Image 1 (cartoon, rainbow, N blue to C red):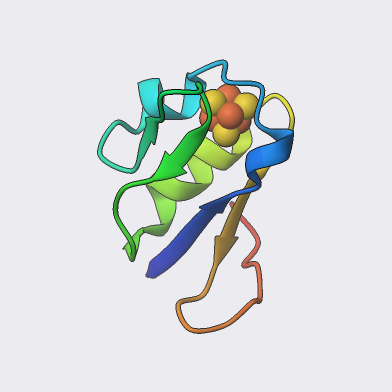
Image 2 (image 1 turned 60 degrees about the horizontal axis):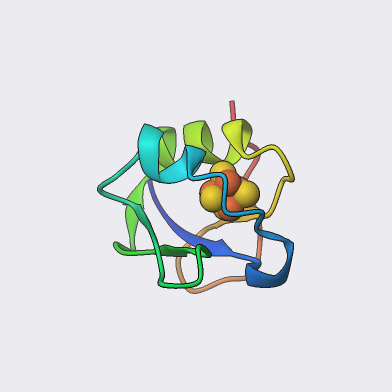
Length: 72
Ligand code: SF4
């Protein structure tokens, strides 16, 4: 399934883990805050990044909705 990802910018610590595990989905801006670079994207990779985020600020949503699917 394809999903959309979003980063809650203020909560991002800038650790870079999401961009390391999924560089095709996330990058860091000049201030060290992560942002999504590709939407929609594969659910499995999006959830992998969401799980690795130490501050749980990556949101995974069904495209066109605000619902967050459960990441397996
Ligand atoms: S893993 Fe989380 S805290 Fe780290 S850069 Fe990505 S969004 Fe920010």
